[in-house]
Image (cartoon, rainbow, N blue to C red):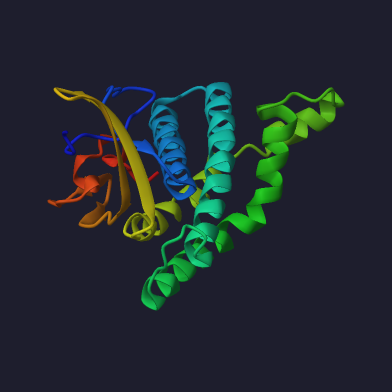
Length: 219
């Protein structure tokens, strides 16, 4: 069986023998990565947009992705700190996650109400509101707010990916017939974030083989 394969990417790199999440923590981590990647792509489009309405629309879509990412990120942090993954983390790791999560929540908390209103009223849903109210919500769509929250994510993610709490599974057709492997847990080590790109360093572990987590540019 081959173990040097990537995590299955539902939007690009799909392989029959690729890894899939086999625990809640791994599922939340992958969902955070997918949402973050989409937000980064939306910001690249925003940088090229010269139309006011287009910029508002792209920001609205980014708000929807941001709040989805926030939900999974909160659950992942909760699992990591509570030990409910079934794998404990060290006091030093716990302190670092708490510090970075606190940094993230301090930025997100004052903006979350307005972001939720955007998503619920004119984003993921369209409520039959008074048109003046819709105009007021539309005016509150601001890429600066989305960027402010998103910029606090990479350092927290780097800390979370290093934790030894994730489980994975893969299926492969071999000479002996179909085989399913269950990997638990794995350390995502050797990860570094530099300005503009999420870089992988050499590692014997799964992180070295994960294109899904290979590019996390800072927004």
